[in-house]
Length: 497
Image (tube, rainbow, N blue to C red):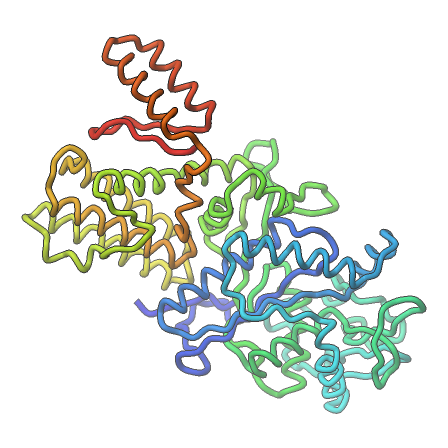
């Protein structure tokens, strides 16, 4: 199946055809660094990191850019409230953000450009707009003239009058039209600023993204991403100013992820995640309670264009669903001696070893689930459907293990096929950035294995003597130690819960 993506600009799914064959440029709007990063700040990076991984798997050379807004009214206000320098606040919050992204496996970002390090490029773009009669100077402020963009509103479908609302720009009493927006703000006494042809000031919110994306990806690039709340006015204004400056298409495809919502106590209720409501959960806080892989899988378990319904209960459910894979990987290693995290031959390279119809049908079923994974990813990066395919593949492997009884019978062919299927499952999950390291699944270095094995022997003895109360007591004791056990045909196995 050929890759198709939903383009907000055209409101249709389109065949994905990069501007330059074999190469893809992606720009994602990043955070304004004035408060510690919350789960909403991680959603876009996780999604687009997975998108980059999939495109790279399809042999595209991908450049992913996420900007850092490190000069803004909000940061200035926060610095004033704390009695600190704006740069100090921004650097501190940015460091936390980058650390959290790395922990969450967002490792595919090629550039994190900062607004303050691109002032010269921003000033040059503002001047270009003035030279094109698309912007004008009022005192020390520079405004974009919306009438310069004849198709203003084409992304959001909103009327020009709507541009008067929802903007982060200053009021601007001397603007020609309320829909005009500031691209360079004069700095007040004591505020951070940079020298420019129009006086000391700082960039407006929208202009920095245009300047940095075009600098790193070109005046026309493939994919521009961000949350749906940025469609208007931010992305609409980016298009207007960029295309007025260059006369070229700014971005070919616009991909917007759904907003993060917090489940409420009311049945089926949810509300927008917002600092004003007070329902924010920082990434650092979540990482104290949930593994990075759990958070990543939680985000990817919803199609990116749908709202993400956030709650601790949902994260716990995701963690439980991941245990399905961890138990399987552990089971395969115990039964076959193959650590599926460490590599090995995938099942497609073992197909000729299939001995009989049952083995052949198993190989075909695993490969069909892998094919389904790619089919749904080719349909607008449906990571939710892709994860469902991983679960189906895991179910097929578990059924095969049960049918062939590889845990109690010494059949090298069935063991090889089960191990190969496990390797295929891990390799497929890694396309989304899952199953990258065994340490997130089964880590036992900090437990006393001999003590646990002794307790399991005692439990087995209690069960044989039909002392089920004692057996349950030992199971509970192990659970309190953070150890989960599972009785299999090959014996009782354990892992850290």
